[in-house]
Amino acid sequence: MHRPRYDDWSLPKGKLDAGEHPLAAAVREVWEETGVRAAPQVRLSSTHYQTPNQSAKAVDYWSMRALATGSSVPGRALPDREVDEVRWLAPAAAAGLLSYPRDAKLLAEFAALPPVTGLVLLVRHAYAGERKDWTLPDAARPLDATGKAEAAALARLLALFQPTRLVSASPQRCVQTLAPLAEATDLPVEVESVFDEAAFEKNPAGAAARLVALAATGAVTVVCSQGLVIRETMPLVAGAGDFTTPKATGWVLPYAADRLIAADRLTLSDSG
Image (cartoon, rainbow, N blue to C red; front, side):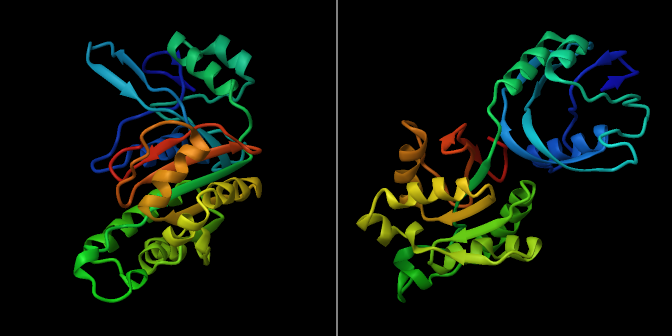
């Protein structure tokens, strides 16, 4: 896109609104500056640089899947004071047009990615009080007020990915965590016990195999499970790393066929 203020060609980016999640800002800025509604897929590298007034700036980037355009010309935003021209080019041609080497480097990173054929968003259920304070069967333990607020916020974040399928472990707190997203997307919550802690103890590889199978369907699937299952399953799908996953957080898992492209943290306060 061309910015008349700086007379440069750059990639879409912008500032966060007050209280706005960085990922929501990324989706919004792409829409405002290009006229394309898009869904995030793979987190790219962040860039850091000095602005003309010598203030430090950091920008997080995501590759996205185009969903719809907002003008009669596909992918073209209406000119305004910030952006007066948008061009859609092959990566090599775009690299030659961009004004900044950092943008060209980021474009090369994007171009090297394999096509995303399936996306799984693996999240841990929201807060449901303390197990020691619950006297009934643990599977029936519901979200408390804090957990319901977390589930609502998580739904707004997960909706940015335009999910097409919702899958939950059987405990009530897992199903309830996806309830606001189910309402927002008009999707049913499918219960699969393979993501339960009890099932994991009997078959530790079952949840990992199911994640790959869900990715292979080509859907954008949100899976809600429990802490132990996520902590022990993530090394099986992503290799070594710290996969401690606090409640109401999770992982973005884009796949190319059965190969995991990346594993990025997803939190309510930050995009990574």
